[in-house]
Length: 332
Ligand code: GLU
Image (tube, rainbow, N blue to C red; front, side, top):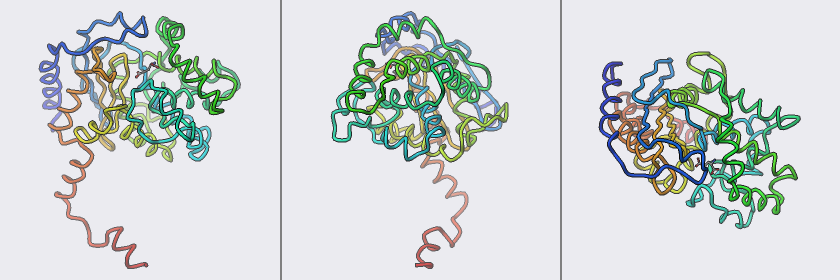
């Protein structure tokens, strides 16, 4: 696809869905209810640093749950895979993002880092001497993914901090089960702060492109994630990023992705590009209605589903006879 035709595709998708009026803006965090349902931006960034965008791609909003894969990457870097797996699993829940139900299951361990319970547990794992240092580490890490300095939106942070009773209940339940240490309020504050980091759709596309590029930002050349943990981050996005529609998403769209209740959506095409979309009206599962449609259409039109892409490569290049399987069987 040429540069011009990708821009034309984005323009056409924006045109196709800007009039879509289904979905509701989140209001359980009061400050988010001020968003205009017509805001709509799409951006795509490639691993070689090109960016295409249309609509409100530079309008700031809070990252919300799209912070979760990035803080999970930090926890993996801080503690290693084994310790993090002891505290947070990698199984999809099939439940809503803010459900506490599965916490009662045998292990008492949150199922995965993409639901609120797991993300609060991950926030408690971020290393640092005190809350300020931990927040500064998170902001520095997110800034490396974005390629510019990012900051917390204070009104949204305070709004969520005062209204986040459900997340407090989840955190205290985890404390009761011994899955959080005594710094429950600190973990919650860091979780609310990281959800309140201000980004744009263009920023999300570049964060996705950084993951697509092996953890290195395409413009700055800075490494944002240890390559040892790239696969882990992309896997939980693929299997758990869209909460209780993760299976349907993997089936239809086939990309590691994460949505957030402010209306953001980030998707990664490994080795190729990142997609960032912003549109506040949400479906009943808490994901942006226009964002889901645009991403599904982009995946279909450009053949981005990971298995489509693999089949296209396979068709273009028949596999060599010495495959991994034949190597294994001949050595056994
Ligand atoms: N900060 C939000 C919450 O904890 C994030 C949820 C989301 O974006 O899905 O409820």
